[in-house]
Length: 283
Image (tube, rainbow, N blue to C red; front, top):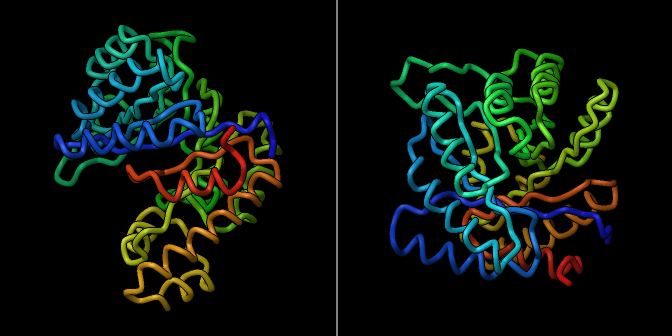
């Protein structure tokens, strides 16, 4: 496997003491894959802001022994410039040097988008406020953002984020490698040269995945959908199949030159750990 392959994992912020303890366990179990960073999501309109802050500060404090950076998600929709400035100051004070900068979704019932409408505006603001202090990750959509007017418009939006100062990108999850390769080709034609890292989504619950995929525009190929549907309530067979599928899928991404892998862990150890073990990504 490629020695320069970068790994990272994403968590959602726990809301209970049990959830906090579970996340500590998951982080400990995933540490041997030596990810560059653990990112922590940020709820719509900042709904999990305090939980996100607590989680990333603990991850960053553990860096002394783990060597793993914390990377909080920063969502601008529904936020003011002052609230973002305060968050940036807080993260700087804890020596956090990575951010995942996103537009985010406007919470149901909230009509005011705040001071920022798009992620490129947030990135420009971060650079104005903090210079090069942060390494900024942004989102990319190989199968086109569900709210984009067209594939060309979506690519133009992505380029604006890169031009605003993004260092690298993490894709929405996908299960069609051709979509990723075509997106990379189109980015190269636009002289976009930042690393574009595939997001890997586990398949623990098909009905849940199906609902989520419909909302975010991620295609589940028909053959894969039919295979997953065939297991019905046979969870053991479903998990065995998806582990084999995701291992093979991830290996193919590495072989076609993906610069890294970003695992949407769902605050679980597996399948992330097992995939990395099978592919020899643990030293």
